[in-house]
Image (cartoon, rainbow, N blue to C red; front, top):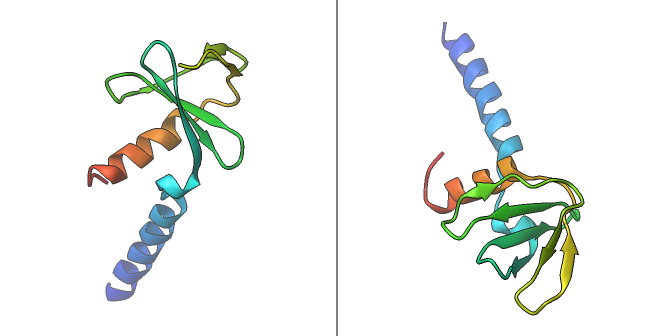
Length: 93
């Protein structure tokens, strides 16, 4: 019984470590004209956050305008990745 518990704990621990993300994976955060922000990860994929701090789904290739007027094309749609980072920041699991 104890060995089953230890094995289960090890499996759950490995899964949690594999899903763990932190802000060190974020290469850049770009504020947009409409008050939203785009997070650009080190692998080049992106996630969008609305002005209330919620992850927003975006279409790949959609064009966005930064506060300084530059255009950015959305690459990827990493909403789950951003949600995980946000939860870890506020102390959630």
